[in-house]
Amino acid sequence: MAHWDPKGTLDSIGLGKSEQKRSTRVADAIRNELAILLLNTVRDPKISGVTITRAEVSDDLKYARIFFTVFGEEKSIKEAEKGLQRARGFMRSHLAKTLNMRYTPDLQFRYDLTAEKVKEIETLFQEIAGEKDNNENNS
Image 1: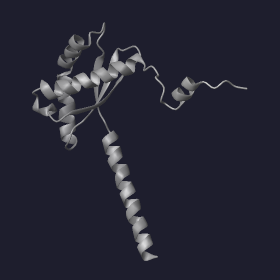
Image 2 (image 1 turned 90 degrees about the vertical axis):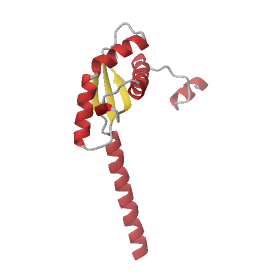
Image 3 (image 1 turned 180 degrees about the vertical axis):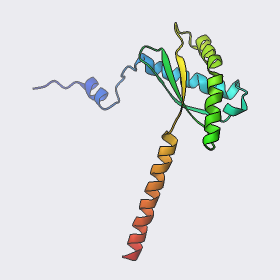
Image 4 (image 1 turned 90 degrees about the horizontal axis):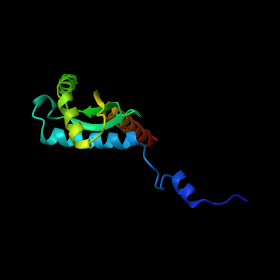
């Protein structure tokens, strides 16, 4: 008969105290620091409306891919990306001071398409709901 392991059961359903990878913890810290930096310090109007949505850090902690969103059209996205590239050195030096790491990851900025995909899916759900209502009313 197999022995029941309560800790294993809790871990398997995501309720146990599982250890996060170091790269995940560093990514969370980078996202938080950059979000605060954008709110409080950066004065460039091209990146004033930028929101940091998430960060991914490589396992060796050398590269950090920073995902952002900005309201507006394609032009404002391109301008925000250019502004973030220009501020990259400033942001990296700020991270070096605040995170106290041996090596500060190289920052790579990418526009986050997740919000647009969510909007597309919501639109599809609304269309499906509208068609369902029409079919029920016609029956």
